[in-house]
Length: 317
Length: 277
Image: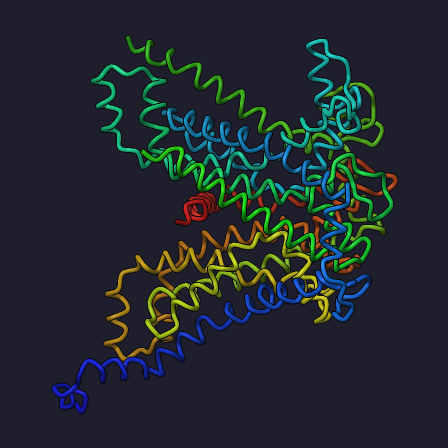
C-alpha cells in the first residue's frame, strides 16, 4: 500500500538507489554463491597465489615460504633435460592423439548416424569404455593386451597373421609403446567425442542434404561441403577438449611405465605431469613443482588460445 | 526390390559390428582373466576361455593384506557419493543466483568464477596440495573430497540452464509470498531434476575414476581409493594377476551399471559439457 502511494514521485535515480539497497536479494545472492565463491577462493586463488610465491622459494621438504631464491627454480627446470624431454614427449603424444581421436570419433558418429536400426545399441557399446578409469585400462593394456608375451592379446592376434611377438612396452627402438599409449586413450575417449559429434550431426537440417541431392552431389561432396562446415563449432570444441586432455596426460603413463617414486624401473617416457609429480611429491621439492606447474599452465593457455585462433581463422569465410 | 536397400546398408552394419567387437574385447579379456587360474593366465599358450572357472580370485582380491581393497572401495564410494550431490548442489545454487538474481557485483562474481576455468585442472595439483596439506588434509577423506566440491564448469553449465528456465514459475512463487531462497528451494531446485541428474552422474563418474589427486593427497593405505589400490597392486613386486583383473572388474562394475541405467542423463551431460559456449 505505501509502495503504491509513494510510486509517483520516484525518480530514476531514486529507483536505482532503491534497487541497490535490495538487501534481501543481496543476501540470497550471497547465500547461493557463497560456497562456490569461498571454495574457489581457497582452492584456486589462494592455492595458486601461494604456489606462485613458493615457485620463487627454495622449498625442499616444506610448503612454507621464506627462502627466496628468485628465478632459480624456473632456471633449473628450463636447464633440466628431463623436463625438456617431457615437453617433447607430450608434444609428440599430442601430434598422434589429437588427429586420430578427432577422425575416429567423427567417423564413428557419421557411421552410427547413418544406421537406421540399432543406433542406440552401437552408441552404447562405443560409449561404455568411457566408464572405465585410466588405471583399469592401463592394467588391461599392460597386463593383457600388450604384455609382450606370446599369449598377450596383441601378439596372439598378430600371430594369426604370422607376425612375431613384440615386447610392446619395453621396446624403445622403434618406440612401439606408442601403439599401446595411443590405443588406450582412444578406446577410453572416442565415445565421449562421438556423442558430441552425434549431437552436432542431429542439428543439421535435412533440407541441406536434399538440396545437395538435387544438385547431384556425391556422398563425399555432401560430407565435405555440407556436414563438415555445419559441424564447425562442434569440431572446434572437440579439438580443444582433446588437446587440453592430451596435455594433461598422467594416469596412463604413470600406470603403464611406473614412476621413479617408489624406486621402480625408470620410465621410458615421462610426460610433464609425471615429472611434476615426481619432483613435488617424490623429491618433496615444492618450489620446483610449483614453478613447473606455472610453466605448464602458461604453455597450455598459449597453445589453447593459438589453436582457437588458427582454427577460427582457417574456416571463417 | 526390398532386398536392394538392405544389401546396400549391409557393409555399414558389418563395419559397426566389427568395431563393436573390438571395443568390447578389453572387457572380455578382463572377465576372462579374472576367472582364470594363476597358472593359466601366465601360460604361454593362448586360450579363449578360462578352464576351469576360478572364482577364488575374487576372494584373493579382498584377502591380500598389503592392499586394503575393501576399505579402498568404501573410500571411493564415500568420495563419489559426497562429491557428486554436494558439488552439483553448489553448482546449481551459484548458477541460479548468477542467472536470475540481479544484484550489483553479479558480473564481477561471474568473472571470478569464469577465470578459474582458464587454469587447467591437473596442473593445480601442486598448489592445491600446498593448501590442503597446510590444513591437515593429507591422508584424509575430506582432503580428497573438498577441492572437488567447487567446480566452475558446473556453475557455468547451470547458469546457462537457468537462463532458459521459465520465469513464470518464479513469478508465481513470488506472488505466493516466497522470498528468493524460498523460490529456489521450493520451485527451482525441484524442477532442475534432469540437469542435476546429468551433471551429478558426470561428477560421480569423474570422482570415482579420479587418480592424480587422490594419489597426491592420500598417501597412507587407509585413505586410498579403489583406483590407488589397483595402481599399487599393479606396480607391486609379485602380482596375483587374476586377482588384479578381478579388482578391475569390481572397480568398473558400479559405473558400467550406472551407464546402462542412467545413459540418457549421461549422454545429455556429455553433450552439455562439450558445447559450453
